[in-house]
Amino acid sequence: MLENEKIDQEGILDPIKLKEKIGYGLGDLGFNFYWANISAFLLIFYTDVFGISAAAAGTMMLVTKIVDAFTDPIMGAIADRTKTRFGKFRPYLLWGGLPMAAAGVITYTTPDLAEGGKVIWAYGTYTLMMMMYTVLSVPYSALSGVITGRSQDRTELISFRFIAAFTGTTLVNFFTLDLVEFLGNGNETLGWQLTMGVYGILAAMLFAIVFYTTKERISPPAQQRTNAFSDLKDLTKNRPWLVLFSIALIIMITITMRAGASIYYIKYYVNRPDLIKYFLTAYGLALAAGAAITPLLTRFIDKKNLLILLMTMTGILSILFYFIPSDAIWLMFTVHILIGLALGPKSPLAFSMYADTADYTEWKTGRRATAMTFSAAIFSQKLGGALASFAIGAVLATMGYVANEAQSDASQTGIILTISVMPGIVALLAAFVMRYYTLDNAMLKKVQSDLKERKIAEKQ
Image (cartoon, rainbow, N blue to C red; front, side, top):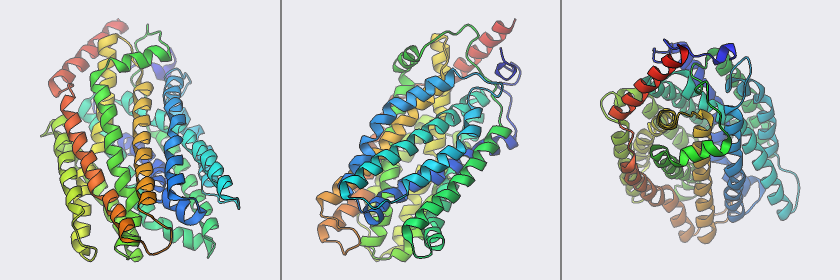
């Protein structure tokens, strides 16, 4: 067994250092130079800059997820079977940053083509960017499942991740449009290319920091011999994972729908485009604050019950958002921030629970496939984001949206629905589905204790 694949039997359940938590967390700051752009700006970039119809852009973002349906689990299987002197997952973060940066620049490039050519270009470049995103994000997410075996430490580790992620979201939301204007110097298309180039280089540097500051401590059982099919089969028998898969998809619809509709809402319903970056930034800061308090909340409330409570709050507040008048700016911002606070803990909770379900699979079957566990979960999030973008595009097209023009009453109604009632109903659905999650604290302690005893027995 390679040196870095050996298990520190005495260290799996020991607390991890602050340096490693911060180092790991910075990776998702890098990922959100891409993901936050996709969530907040890509759809409006396609409709208002590149000149693709809302329906075509939304459909494209959904159809490309079919590719992800294959690439995410495939990448999970590859990562689980990677063996290098640096570990299974960390090397991808060192090698993949610059190719990812190039893919980002190409995606935000606008060649002078006819409508059909533009759509084909968008399909090809967006698919390329998401494939590169998969190559990095699957190993990165799986890494959290092998750094430590302590459930509370996983929650704290992943909270650092999503504090950084939502900080990245905030930075992207606040600075992107100004950067596009500054770097483009009047040329909006050039501005987008250069902005993505800057973001890509920064992200590559952050991915390298993850590589140098983290350590893989947990590996599969020494006698494990599996294939990708058996890994997927194990997941289908893991009820807690199946529930989380559904929850991730549903909640990402809520998050992405609100983020994607925000610019349309402020620009065309509130008629205050000067408030766009402040509206997005307030939401990002609220998400970061929610992620920051997650470890504190989980000390007093079971993860399952906390998610149910938070998604119920999100659903109610989102539906109430529909009734806020367009000139009630302070009330609008207040409710928007409260929704962000309620959604903030979702990601650290869900991803720490994914790591727990990887333990559950190993406990139940004697086999461990950490990257496969996370890769299929990441696919559910991507699909949720794509469904949200498709829904926004479909609603806007149905209601008669026309880019860069005053909107009709029907179009404005569609915009309001996509940021309020629609994500609100989806959030309430998530709260209902979460009731079926069965891996509670007592069961988890038993699983992790049994696994530690097995590892010690293997070593003897």
